[in-house]
Length: 261
Image (spheres, rainbow, N blue to C red):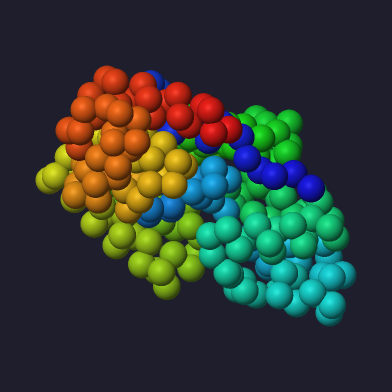
C-alpha cells in the first residue's frame, strides 16, 4: 500500500506566478479559490496531500457492486466523510477493492482535483497525478491551472470574478448548499483589502508544521502562534531568538525538514 508521502514542498513564488500568468488572473482570485478548497494549504501535517474520498463517485465507477457490503465507501449519495487523515483510511479500503477506481474517486491537494480528471489534464493517469501532487504544491497548483484552462466557461468566470459561476463550474450544481460562491467572494475581497499570503511566511509555517511545531495554520501571516513556533525552533537550534524569518532560520528550517524525510 503506498504511503502517499513525498517531498510535500510548499508553494513557491515561481509556481504561483506561473499559474497566475497562465490563467491571466489576479493573485486575489487565485488565493481565494485555493483558500476555499483547502484552507489554503495542500498537505496534512504528516505530508500527505489533503484528500476527500467521494463514495458516490466510487460507487458509480465500480457499477455499484460493492455497495451492499461497503455502504460507507460505496453509495449512490455523497457522504460518510471522516475528514483529514481519516479520509485515507476510507481511500485505502476502497483501493483494496478497486485501486484505480479508488484513486479516481478522491479529490487531491491544493485545488481538490478529482483523480478521474487526470488524463484529461495531461497526466498519464491518476497514479501519475497523485505522485506529482505528493511532491509539491507547485504541481498541485499546476493541476488547478490545467483544470481551469481546460474549461473555458470556468476560466472566463474567474476572469470576470463571477463567483456564482466559478462555484458552479468548479464545485458542481450543489455549490449553493455549501455557500462556495459567497466564500469565494469573501476571500477575494479580504485579500483585496488586507493583501495576499506571504509565500515565504507560508513556507516557514509548512516546515514548522511538518516538524511538529504549532504555527496554527499555513496562511502566510506571521501572527503570534507562528512567532511562538519560531521561537521554539530557534531556541532548539541555538539561533538568535527573534520570532522572525531571517535567512539563518529559514535555512535551518529547510535543512531540518530535509533531514526528517
